[in-house]
Image (cartoon, rainbow, N blue to C red; front, side, top):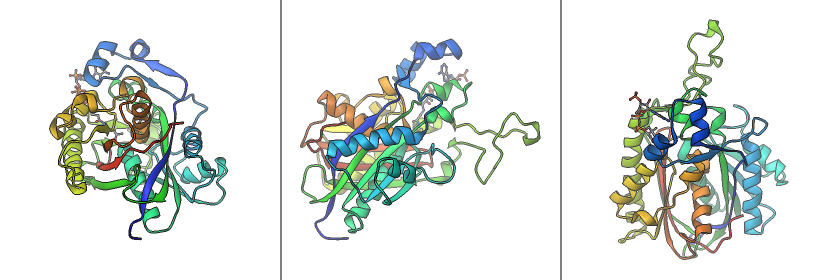
Length: 337
Ligand code: ACO
């Protein structure tokens, strides 16, 4: 690693599909209610992509806005965090790069479900730290609406579609925007807790309606209670470790945690010793947007004035894998696009 070289956030962009589905809309087609969803999760509505839209469409919008925010028209690599690629093969990032007019740059997907954006940031930061890139576009984009069981109220109530992106540039570790300590972890013994059972090499069957294929299940499944417990424990431990590694003895000014459930956010904040009103919250308006969750919350917190230049920021996320991660930084002066 080159001494004194850091990856610095210099642009931020987001995009949400225009169609909004409220809790009341869901209660028209599922056995649920606005009261249940709000009280158990904090979610009030989510954005859902039209059937003509794929993840690349959202990623291109957010990526283009991040580049405009950074005032750049080229990067050396595109890292796309997603669990809902346009197709199982190839990766979606090369298509996004070409549609953004970025030519033949390195472009690949990172799959770490709801922690994908932080894994993507770490990957981009590593490329910059080793001198392999001067600028990297890191995008988190997901269209979970395409993998949810239309009859499953426990997942349809939670997830929404969206995309967010940052531009990283080479800079100095003491600058605002320089990514500080990272903590990344995983526990594959919990891989069945958040899973799409069929459609991969373990069970290639895809169509649940073809009798010859028995009980193929191509939908996203989540063991809510176990995931809830794991999310609180893992994000708390990861956040604490990152703060220790970076040498912070007092709580950060702002916590931007994966937007899965308001009760999870508050439990993590309480355990880490961060005031609840220092937590970014946008899940009430966008739900759980998986890999897009952290950058969407960063933009929301910046626009609301919660997150300001110079603030000590802690980001933490948890999701399928199981996989989790945290990262610290001082927030830079960026205007979200
Ligand atoms: N409306 C009404 N009832 C519901 C709904 C709904 N939308 N969803 C579930 N229920 C019912 C269940 O069917 C169950 O009914 P039963 O007792 O008759 O069986 C009851 O509510 C209780 O279900 P639980 O799953 O125990 O409810 P819980 O309070 O745990 O809330 C939830 C469920 C919201 C999913 C919660 O467990 C949760 O948020 N889990 C964590 C999610 C998370 O952190 N995800 C992050 C990673 S996601 C990723 O990586 C992609």
